[in-house]
Length: 234
Ligand code: DX5
Ligand code: ZN
Image (tube, rainbow, N blue to C red; front, side):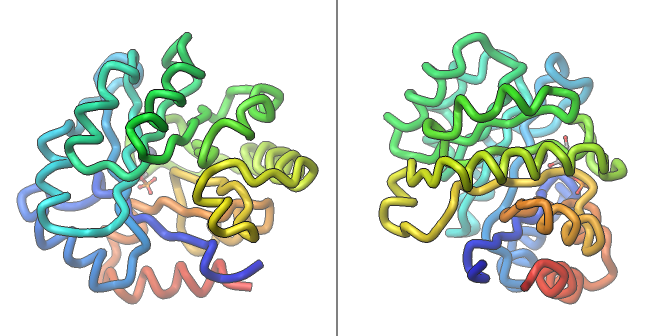
C-alpha cells in the first residue's frame, strides 16, 4: 500500500481552544494531512463542542484539508454553512438522519467530499450499500461524544469487513479516486487512536487516522505525529 494514501488528521477537539491559531500551526508544522473538526449538538451526542464560526476561524489560519465530523441531528441543514466555513469534507452519521442519500448528494453538489460515519454498535451489514456513494467511511472506534476514550477493539472486525467489501467491489467512486485510480475508498478511524491502536486499525484496512489526545496531549506534538506515522507505515 503506498504511503501517501495514509493520512493523519489531528482532532482539534483536543487542542487548547484559547490558542486555536497556535494549535492549528502546531499540526501544520508537524506535517499533518488535515485537521479534524468535531461538531456536536448536545442531542445526537451528550456534548457541545464547536460550530461554523470555529471552522471559519480555523480556515483563516490554514490551507490544510478540513475534515468536519458532524455528530448532530439534521446534518442536511448545516451543509451549506460548513461549506462556507471552509470544510473540505463533511462526515455525518448514518444514525442521525433518515435522509442519508439526499445528504450525500447535497454535499457533493456543494463540490466537497462526503463521508458517512458509523457508531461502534451499528451493524457492518449497513455499510456496503453506501460504498459507491461516498468519499470515505468514518468508523467510530469509540462512542461519539468525547475525546480521550479507549479504542474499541471490537470495531476491528467491522473495519476488516468493510475493507474486504471495498476490495471486492474494486470501485473507484469519487472524483478524487478517478484522478487517483490506485487510491481505494478511504476507511477513516476515529477515537482512541495512538501508535498501537492505529497499527491494529491499519492492519484491518484503515487508511486515515484521526487522533486527538494522543497528539495534543503529548509533550511534543511533532514527535508524537512522527511516531504515529511510523506506526502505520508498511
Ligand atoms: C469523538 C470524536 C473524536 C475525538 C477523538 O466523538 O469524534 O474525533 O476527537 O479524540 P481522541 O483521539 O482523544 O479519542
Ligand atoms: Zn471525530
